[in-house]
Length: 116
Image 1 (spheres, rainbow, N blue to C red):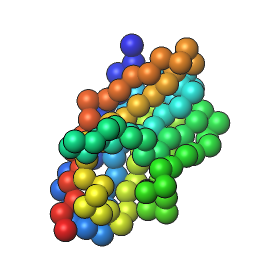
Image 2 (tube, helix red, strand yellow):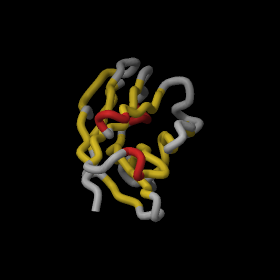
Image 3 (cartoon, helix red, strand yellow):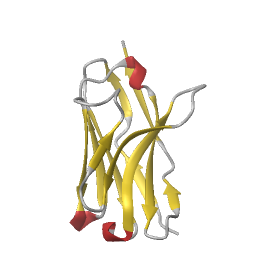
């Protein structure tokens, strides 16, 4: 079982920036995909961004051009840089990994609140 430790959430005004971090207890190389999901109150959890072992990235249309996912292989950590935040980005953000056996693990979640 992989452990995922998230950090970086908080309260920010619209237009501001935050960077989320997710440190994994295993090597990044053991994951097919590392990514971020979010869940707003009353809504389903949705993919925000993901990065494959090969470095290919994928973003939700709603965050393209504003959010950037990256990975520090030496630290087994994936980041989500969020710029131009909007109130509709308010949600609990979850780190997620899929290992080479297609097993998924989730972080505990970190709250992001964007005030208007």
